[in-house]
Image 1 (tube, rainbow, N blue to C red):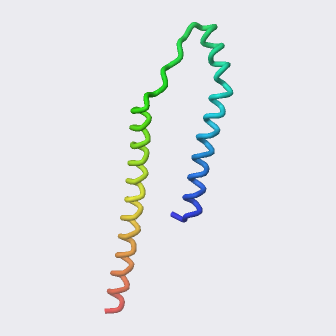
Image 2: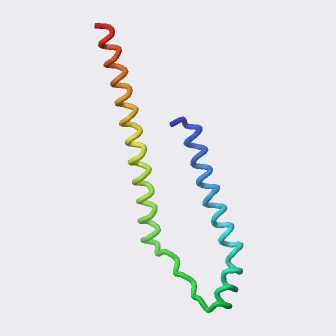
Amino acid sequence: MNKHFEDARYYLKRAGKTATKGVKEELEPVEERFRELTGKEAEPEPSRLEAVKADLKELQEKAEGEAEEAIADARGKIGDYRGKEETEA
């Protein structure tokens, strides 16, 4: 994948995470007020272990995707090379 697209994807993901944090912070007082009025309790935040597991799962999926792309690229190059080899012979 083109480096520019990789960079753009990284920054879009980062912007999304930052925006999510901002929205959560802005809505926190509204959520607290809602819970007071309805009597519902807040859900516990995920533990540090759960967060690390989720991060590792994400990294694993990214690595698998990149490996599949690299394999497909290598197969294409090998096929192109073999095609040239047959036409030259």
